[in-house]
Every structure is written in structure tokens, then in C-alpha cells.
Image (cartoon, rainbow, N blue to C red; front, side, top):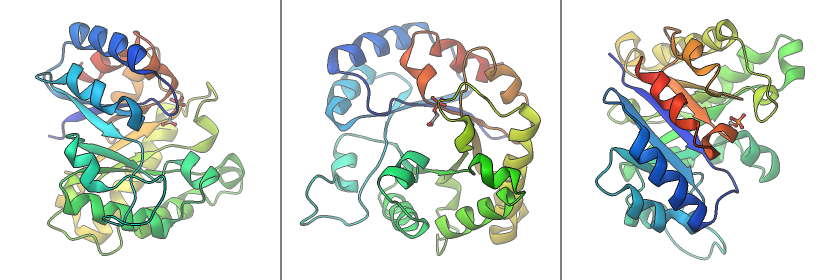
Length: 250
Ligand code: PGA
């Protein structure tokens, strides 16, 4: 049985005070034992968040990392720096990073490998634009994104990788993929993982859906056999995010 996981992605939001207030409330109101929870937060609030979450079962996540261990990369953050703050999960290749910061499948792959070396779980984001879906090329695109992200990833580490299917047309738009659309692609991703690593490993990999998930649609998405949780943007900034987390447990 795969444990469900719900990850909040705060993007470029939250001061330290706002972070502390929201997480204190979340910590007090969530009631789950079978579900993993993490928040991918801005670097500036990581230390605050890490203190608030100490001795809770909610984990700290990052939204990005650099693939090189150290050096002259002004403005970047290394895997070792994330480890120092006890970061357990790190988003890689979010569509906003691919779009605005020109991340490629190759940089995604380097980051995945650097994170796995350090025992931080990469959350690899893949997904198509509405045009690609309309052209019927979305599954091929996702196959390419998944294969390139996982290129040369050792079978020893593969079960630490989480893959998040986030169709671009559903991110921040209020338009969620239907549970059938999301399930179709998540099960296809599992099939690709099976092609590379075999069926039994593919059954252990966690595959999430992301894109306008909220307290009203989470339960139905989580009921699908190949959806192991969600990556949640906007709705993770509000106290009602607790309802999304609790829905994963049902
Ligand atoms: P959203 O964002 O939930 O606001 O659509 C999801 C994401 O970008 O990870």
C-alpha cells in the first residue's frame, strides 16, 4: 500500500509571521496517521517553518534547488543547505520554473540525482499545455518528461522519487482536471515507470495530481486508484487546506 501524500506549494507567498500563524493552526487541526504532509516553502521562511513543525509529522519541503554542490552560482541554494534545514522533499521542474526560469528536462534530471544522493525526496512535476492536449500529444510529452527526468536514476533510489502530474491549464486557473482525466495520466505515468523499472517498483512509486486542487474536489481525486495525493498551490495558503489533508486519509 502506498501512503498518500499532500504537499502544499506556497510559491512566492508568505512572510515569517504568516507562515507561523498558518502552520500553527494546521498542526493543531490535522488529524491523519496514514498520510504524509509537507510544505514546499520559500527559503526565507524555512527556518521559521522548521521550528514550528518540530516534533510534528509535517515535513519541510523546498520549491527548488541547484544541482551543483557549491560554488559561484549567485542566488542559488544547494542540496547541502537544504539538508542543513532538515528539508525532506524538493519540487523539481515545476511548470513555472520551466516557463519563467527556463528549466529543461536535463536540469531537472541533474537536480533529481543531486537530491537523491542527499536523501531528499524529489517531487518531479510534469504536465502539458492546453494546446498540447488539444493536439493529442500530451501523453507523448509526458512520457518524454518522465523518461528524461529519471534518466540514469539508480533503481536503489527510485522509490524515493515522487511524480506530480500538473496539467498547465489547471494550475492556478480554478479549472481542475476531472478525476478521470487525472487518473488517466497518473496511471500512464505508472506504466512508464514500469517500462523502465518493472511493474513491482512502479506499484511503490507515488504519483500525485496538482492543479486547482481544493477542499471541494480533493476527495474525489484521492479516490482514484493511481492518484496518491496532491500538490496544492493556492489552496495551501488557507486554513481550509486542513480539509484537503484530511480528505487524503478517508
Ligand atoms: P494551484 O497550483 O493549486 O494553485 O493550481 C498547483 C501548483 O502549481 O503546484
